[in-house]
Image (cartoon, helix red, strand yellow):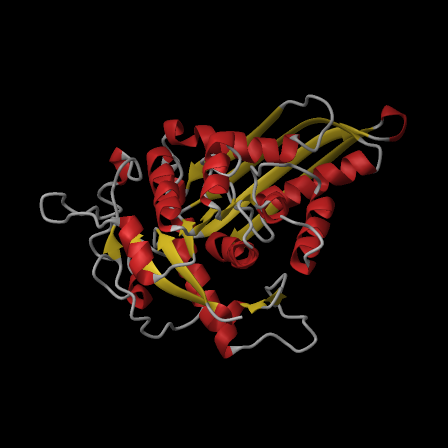
Length: 361
């Protein structure tokens, strides 16, 4: 069915892992039996991973602006593990507005451009000129104004929108209505990792509930060493993040439970590796105590890319079918704070039904 033309708001580690990974699968095509490592859907409807192309990108890092996207994804402070070489993409990274995307303590690390020397482009116009189908939002956590600016730019350009960060847009009625009125689809909010802290925590909680065990308390602690974790050392930028991660787990428990979930510390030597500690305390048969302690170590950005690649293709199918507003199937399965929250087993079936066309959205 042709190519999927994608624009990126932010060219950090997550964007790098996505672009490198797509190039990896171009060089290593999915197996004919469909059992390909790293892909939930080698084909999502009629779309293969290799059908995704990149046509525009926006940044505030002066070292990335003006460079071809293939070079920008490897530019500091990006530190994601090397997956694949990326050939020239003929896409020049353009300056986007700074807004609240850069916290004061991140200005030097992000190499923010001088507003006296560099002016941001008209993002909506760039999206139209590049004929982008979809805009993927990869701004830093805490970018409330920035996320809404890019969401509005997508609306103005008639683009689908994938909101990977914990700012509530797809799950907020006012914004959902805007996408419905403009007749374009949106998926969000706050991407889940492929095999990450949230999905594993949800699986453990779901196991407790289904097996008749009581959850008495739980926490999830996360450590990392990239700019994402450095950005999140300022608590004011974490309000939506904590809500998103906590609700993703607590929504599965049919009673109130003391819970603490969210970023815990910045450890520079970890770079893009994330270390997660999950704790669950509960009771099983005859009120006998039960405790689970789990440690997870992952390269964080590739964990995100394995899910975003499905969200992009789901939104493109929505565009093809003329679907407007939030896509509840892919949002419930792939995001921490979707418009509708259901168990992952239900959301997974919704996605399969959506692909077949037996579920509208």
